[in-house]
Length: 375
Ligand code: UD1
Ligand code: UDP
Image (cartoon, rainbow, N blue to C red; front, side, top):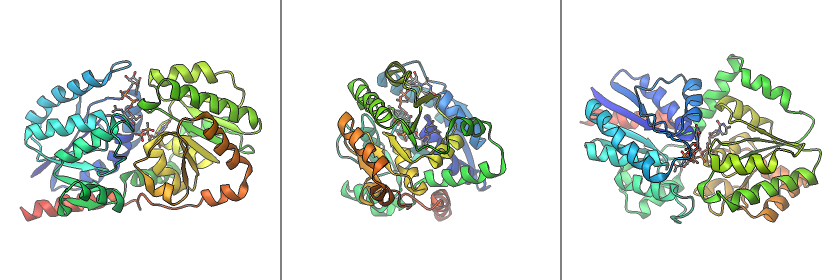
């Protein structure tokens, strides 16, 4: 029986790998195990709990304010004994984090075949996003199979001479996760959502904010906070809710600069279903997140992306996402115009699904099953 090992470590990887793990667990023809590096701890555990996934291995590597050097080394050395003990045939890694690239290297050393989920996203700028663009290029070099979310991501891989027959366009598993979450929340009461219902004033426009990118640490976050303060002051009738990422380089400036603004609420990171609920309630989303850029178009929510580049051009082309960087004036001008210009808002909140139809995990599992039956 073929053995599959899923390796992930951060919140977004967990959200996007969870539907795939569940799909593989349904199939008795495979032995499937999960190894978390726990590059994130609390934010990872929130996801594991919601999707009811109990990892078989937990490297527990997270340290406060960790650096890329030691994190990379700990993931690679920690995986050695896991790979030697389990000896997987296929190792699945996701996206572009330090866990993804380090796990791909370790899996390659072990002789396993490497499957890259969310393959082929590119900005072609190695410093933006940092270090993610290089992480995904390295992972793509190592991978044997590439599960590309869109036709554009497949094209990016083809331009790097990756063979067409090792690439499958699947849609993004984030849409599978979004649908799983909506279905589960309909049947089970969620305490966090009940608390949020008391916090959100349904009569006021809600702006939802998230941010964490390393290249925005420092002056970028100061600009972002100043922009949010100005938007809140210019529009006293709107409410801004900001679940603040646990990275200390984010927590410090955000709490120092925004704690005392009456219509900005800073809260802890939310578990996935509560965050999806809040996205649904929002009028506008301002973020530097990759995953949120993919989810928001499916929910019909306009997004201002606080980055200089994006590897997710599909929603920009469709007009639901605007790239604003971390320039204070640009963020304020675009947000204020979406608050006041109803026609511009209506055009941007056009609901569409460039990133998937909820069947990406099924396609990936079917592909691996077919490979298995050929051998
Ligand atoms: C990481 C990924 C980034 C991904 C993001 C998703 C890298 C280099 N960065 O960035 O690609 O987009 O996750 O959120 O792989 N912390 C906690 N608890 C948690 C999570 C983080 O306390 O549950 C704090 C710790 O002090 C930790 C720090 O945040 O050291 C930074 O975590 P790290 O994973 O290195 O970077 P992120 O900014 O989270
Ligand atoms: N998310 C969440 N709780 C929050 C904020 C975000 O569950 O408080 C989810 C969000 O829906 C998306 C993912 O986390 O699926 C994005 O994670 P993040 O922005 O940290 O990472 P990125 O996608 O930029 O790598």
